[in-house]
Length: 161
Image (spheres, rainbow, N blue to C red):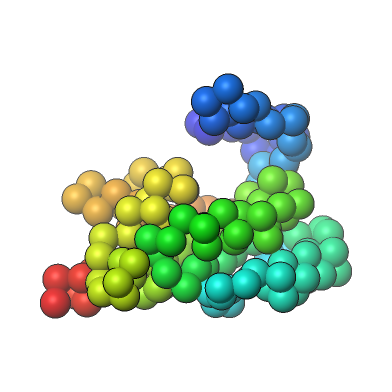
């Protein structure tokens, strides 16, 4: 989404092939004080517990303007089942408030547990295109209120190894 106005409510929906979501609402930053829900590693083979934790944290902080997920979203970055389970666990959160996601080392694991390019992570998130052009979506930054957030990928040296 581009050219959004500060402090404005919007509606959106998504389309994948012939499947269209219902309309969802979100509000852009109004420049004032804000609260964020910050999630640590969620990596798991079973996201049932994670889903309960994430949902409860959001329910207790309904006034949060955004969420931040600190990396290791999944246990194995190339396992699409885990990505779908993580997305389902964030339903009602990520379709309601904006989020910032960052890669952990688990996003860089291949199905045989070797370091690999984080293709699934890169395919699932459309992030601000303001980082290094050679590493699109590995680095980005954004402003919310009077805070400037910078998201870094610390796995590049390990990937080269």
